[in-house]
Image 1 (cartoon, rainbow, N blue to C red):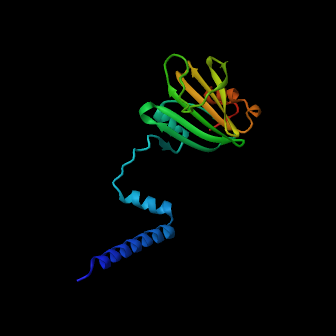
Image 2 (image 1 turned 30 degrees about the vertical axis):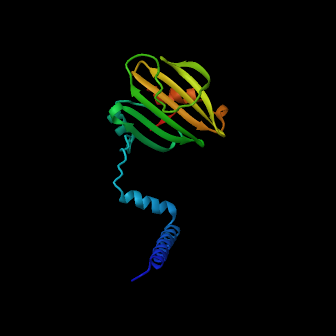
Image 3 (image 1 turned 30 degrees about the horizontal axis):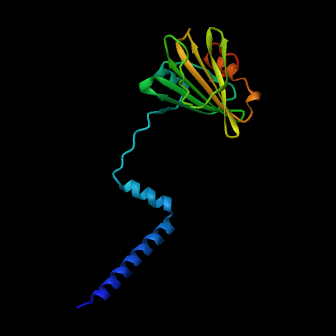
Amino acid sequence: MISKTIARRLMIALFIISISVSVASASETGYSELMNQEYEESDLVSSANPWTELPTKQQLEDVTGVCFNIPEGAENIRYRCLQDKGLAEVQFSRDGDEYCVRAVNQTEGRPEDISGLYYEWMDEETFSFGNCSGIFGRAQDGSRWVERCLWVDPNHEVNWSLAVFTADPDSLDIVGIAEKICLSDNTGISD
């Protein structure tokens, strides 16, 4: 029969061995991989992404009912929609800056903030072009700036937002870009 002292020592030794094996396993696979493996094997459930990626501008317009233009020189274009809200979104880069356009049908009223950006906006000003009117603002986000325009196009009953992340806000005319995005004449615009 094994004495209590030997039994305790044996239990401690087994405990130390199991810890050593766990540490060795974690260091070989990497901690993040180990954590991901544990989550994959668990019964955790995450919520579905509400955004739907669409391959073309035409499909986005068909799904949301919002028609728009893409500025000339736009690259890395992504079309997305939030179908239950009828919200269209286009992300693109242009001249090293990152843009996000959002639009939703709206029959009346002032522009609503559909940008999804939550900054303290500085230098807010009103602007207008054609029959459209809206609000422009800018905020600093670390070393880069964020500019945002919100406006309503009463002719097409659309509420718009255009945001740009840029290192040099003085080098661009975001209101001019906004005007090209929502007006129906295609001067200077490409699909």
